[in-house]
Length: 80
Image (cartoon, rainbow, N blue to C red; front, side, top):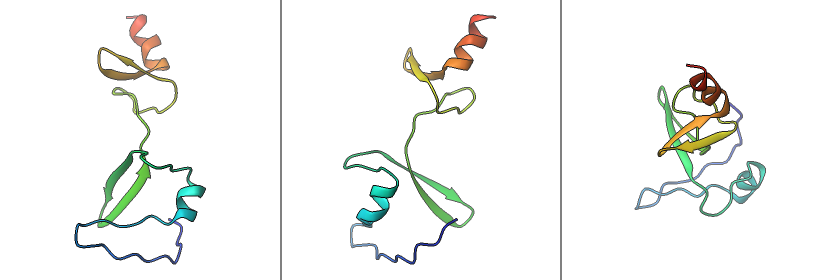
């Protein structure tokens, strides 16, 4: 994990500000969804990308009956 040397305090509502430089570098825009994960005792923030319910792939994801499925899994299901 890269160290940035940036430290932010949490405000009284539990919010933090992600510096503009990091948002620009990671192509995070206003109102983009951010995923919050735990990795042992660390909190990880990352830009949310929808993924396939079967394999977790983020590429070529399509919604089918309210569920996200990737192109590869659609092909496998089609062969069943």
